[in-house]
Image 1: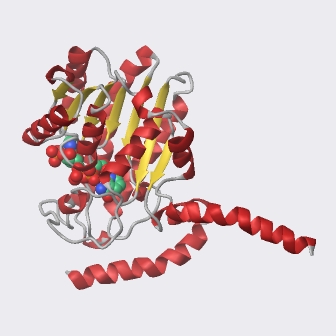
Image 2 (image 1 turned 180 degrees about the horizontal axis):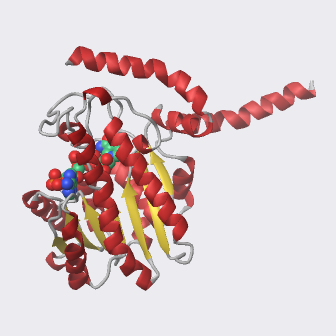
Image 3 (image 1 turned 90 degrees about the horizontal axis):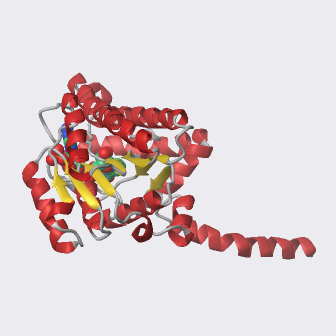
Length: 320
Ligand SMILES: NC(=O)c1ccc[n+]([C@@H]2O[C@H](COP(=O)([O-])OP(=O)(O)OC[C@H]3O[C@@H](n4cnc5c(N)ncnc54)[C@H](OP(=O)(O)O)[C@@H]3O)[C@@H](O)[C@H]2O)c1
């Protein structure tokens, strides 16, 4: 009798937690920080924030939300006209003045330009408080049908370009003993994703680099290395993805996967920055559940996912 009552009580305690998890769109530490932690509005104002990949998608939305927080913004990507458009949107919708935003064109693959770009930011604003390594590209093709040029280009853009820029900015943060390096990775940097082997490889490489870098910075507790791992997010990434060839992108297609809204993803990124979280996952269900399963029970995850992966590959072949 007493056991029956105990089981009922346990079920009543666990049920709300399960219901909350079913609705969660981020890992539990991040959701806790959203509920009880520091607000971006208190923590990030007056900071100098450099965002790469600011001409579109997550980077553009990040610039817009930051522009409401009274920061100084540096907007970088390759397409200057798109950066100017984002700057205008920030000026119209945010609390910034012309002098608070620097448009700084930058190609992640042109590594010799990164030092000059860093100096340009320091000349303009005197310091860099936050570097957001966000620029990047994906592809959609089977590994064996993907030209090596695609592997090389994605390593250059997503991995080496980001490492190079970080190596230019970090000495300045080390001198000041403070700063945040925030990198927009992907759940593809933790989990395998079929039809995205080159992308996943570049994002796994980024994760390895930043985790090791963080371990080396034990004498700099004021510097935070933060890795953001989103699942699918509304943006232009699918349209801009390479096919198996580096000269061809996918273009407009419909993706039948649940995607988190860009504004929600960016709000959660800002909460993560305000609370100095080191690793965060942002994803709708069932992706979030899969990420947890992968972390704690990888063999079970393989068994559950292999059926889904087969379907994804077969659907993609049918669509071609
Ligand atoms: N959307 C998702 O589902 C998703 C999920 C997980 C992770 N992510 C990550 O989120 C980040 C942003 O992607 P997004 O979804 O916002 O896609 P997006 O809309 O296609 O934006 C990509 C940005 O990266 C810039 N970029 C591309 N190549 C570059 C280069 N060589 N040098 C400098 N900038 C470059 C682009 O600007 P230019 O073309 O003007 O250079 C653009 O601003 C990426 O790192 C991506 O891997 C996205």
